[in-house]
Length: 257
Image 1: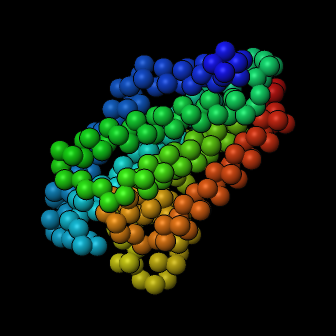
Image 2: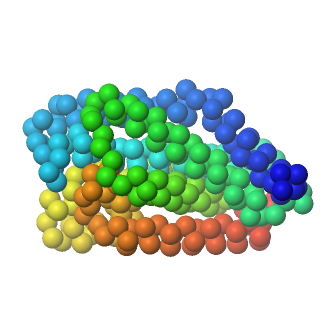
């Protein structure tokens, strides 16, 4: 098994991806930790004391799962979109496309790299959070399942973005104008139960709301969203994005010049 060409190809891609972001850890892993510290100082200590409790928990406890999930989403997405587009830009992807490597192996390799960075960043952020708040775990299986599925989903989304991107500016459009607003409006810093009924219904159209709340349920045992629906939605997006990515690879769309 370990000598099978496909396994060797997969492990090579994953090793390349992990080496890529660990080599420049100051740019890839450290910023998330600094950002979370700032959020805790500003939102947790300064603003949180004025807000009081939310959902029966201190405001700092309430926002921890959302901050962890935000770092997982951002890093999973950015790792794949930047890495795969760089391969396109340097034309090294063309060598991979003509090699006897199945498309599914190429996709799995890049996605695994994105998932590893997302989960590693999430772990680092969790450790940082322990210095500010006592973290309780309600359901570890939900936590692990949601973080793996979410990082997989956004790694696939980053892959699709990279395929269509024609310049380095294109890989920043989605994170800046779509991903960031959806994340901040996805219940990271508040419960949608505080919103008027109309805006609660509008918020239900934000997929990140489901991921944040499912992850929060794993820690606190409370959620604004049905957990089964949230996990089902994530699985739906994973299957859809994987299908789109495989189609793009098989047709060579955006890859062959």
